[in-house]
Length: 253
Image (cartoon, rainbow, N blue to C red; front, side, top):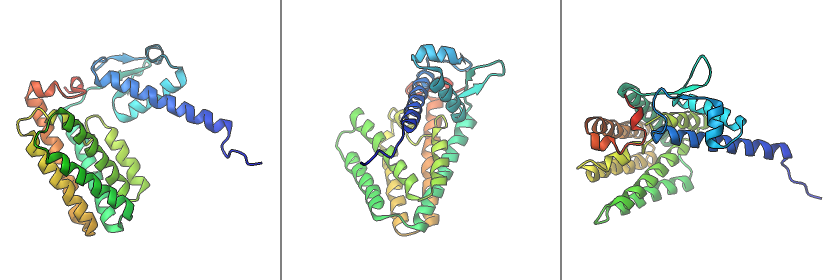
């Protein structure tokens, strides 16, 4: 008689991990949406009551958010919501660009399996179609955000290195370092469409460099690509109406 390879313990562990992720996402949402201001104290018991969850996943979630950089541990117990300077955000974006550049270089040097390369090309092609539309409203901008995030996920896996993928995942979890962290802010800028065209040209150039096995070129392109986020950060800090569109703007000091 065939038996399931897993054990009851596996199911319990999986369920616990899922609850921890749910708690993590819930708390992150509260912080970035501005319900918890910088310096606000978060205790385990408060989070348990606010989320309606047990202490174990909440405890794990708080520790993960500390690892992400959204929380600081307080010596007397509990955590406090962090704030972020312009320099810290700049460094987080720079770190992400450096790691993505490395991922692109390794992908080019090591080669990418055909199915993954096809997925990268298909993603870039879909962005081309989207940008070719005569009108580029809110719905299409949201779709661009989805495709942009897919491109960056595919690039991370293309390097065929679990070590770099893990480090890149950590970098992407840093506040405001996500490839789409400032894209929605960009929508309010007068030259938003033109900037998306430039970003897409860089996407396609990176895919081309990887296919041609041009590692140095692929790396340089991805590092330059991250600089668009630096530009969007400066726009957000200069313009209050643009800044108001930035999720988590209340954390920037």
